[in-house]
Image (cartoon, rainbow, N blue to C red; front, side, top):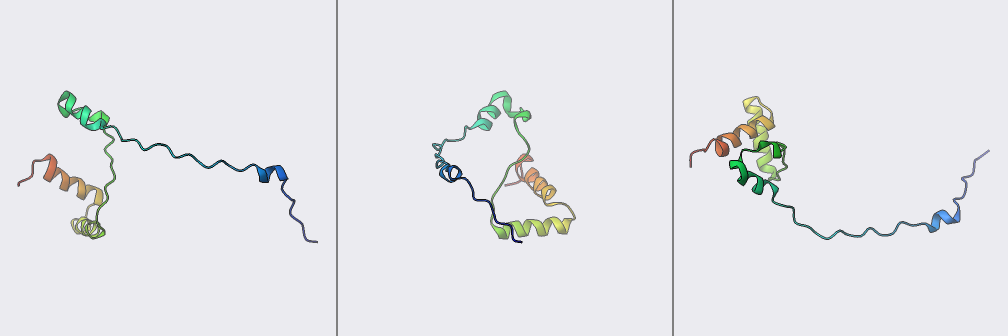
Length: 92
């Protein structure tokens, strides 16, 4: 014997969600710039240590290849490269 699905109450069909309103676009505050200017830029507690960067797929592939060649994770390779070239005052 086949079981029939119960019909949903008519009130349920009538209750539709109202379209979501778009929030006005807001500019993100420059919190890092303001805080790093204060206290000589040494307030590291305001930074999470994480950020997302978008880059070309070819560069991503090259970074992964170099990290594998050196036997380190991509994270460690990029961290070392940035440290050498930015924080360490790399040669120009």
